[in-house]
Length: 519
Image (tube, rainbow, N blue to C red; front, side, top):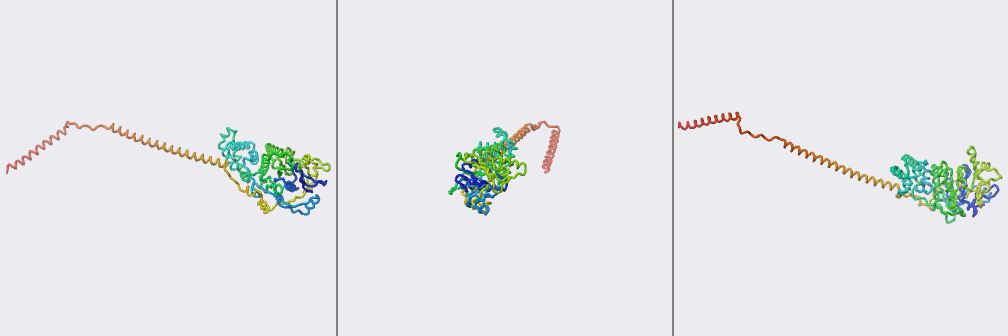
């Protein structure tokens, strides 16, 4: 038994009947559940390669690293060969056409998108914001749209948060209160996201869906493997990224109804991370996407430990179900076991709850949709062996696959074009320059005014001094006129001098004349 033109061979039931997933019912979604170590990843690998062989592109996340072996041909051992022979299956070891992706660009081609494409709801989920902080983040996105500011990376978002904080009063009057405390909380959450390596996810060139939805010349669909070994350390980022990718598929792909086979099959591993502590708005978004993306030709398969991890509104949309073993050691485990067993169409040959606990590795309870879209009776099934390798690919094998990738060099180098951060920085620079010029002009005017005041003060002081001098001169007394009248002393002096002069003159004359006479 092998894959048929109409369906994917999952395994063989206890009744020796093939369990085949019909391609024209594959877009009705499904779930692969089971405890750790029961074979979920192998089932995912078998389904991914089966869809690829049928010409259906696949996207799946590699949480533990062992799914990377799908890029290498299998080397079946005696046990796997015997199991295949018991099913009438001939194993043909071959690799699936694989493209590796990695948000951090280490073990695959980088995947990027812009902050604007993520939107405030998913960004709030990534940052673990409360309702008030999410409201402020929505305001930030509104301001970006209104002012034509591109939000490409986290640097743009941080710059815009600073801008909104600085203009909170003006923006608050237009769209509501913007609390500085909320802005600060968002900035701290951004810092934490950056420390977790989330900054690598935001930027350009952004992922084009066409690069994932490829079919090769050999007619096989491309298997896109997202390396999530590091990404799982940031579960909110992991869940938000996968939900974003689903949303992009929903928004960009055209309606096709129920095609003969899906356009893309999407495996959401560790699906419980998407729903843990998810707000109501996000759950409604997931339910809407899962419900409506079927008409886009996309099949979504959640991979988780227990179907109870998935909300009932979403679980009701999943028609194809593969349930590996569950262990019920605690009351909550027993509750999950009952929920899992009750989700199947009853098989009178066995008790579903007991069968789930008794399943071995590589066995599962399987219920798939038939041609009429109704679930088949649950069957205990041995899962078929894969054609590709069980176990991880080596670093050298991964590097060789990446070197031959059809998207090699397309996303490897980040591009940083002008966006909100650069525009706001230019505005700040222009504002600072204008402020500096205005300050310089004001300082010059102030200095000129001060000098004019000093000059005026000096002139006033000089004028005052001149006026004071003129007043002093004007007030000085005139020199007294000499009197023509003689004082008694002057009269006595003159009289004595006349008498002395007369006597002296007379004596001189006598002397002269007397001498003359004697001669």
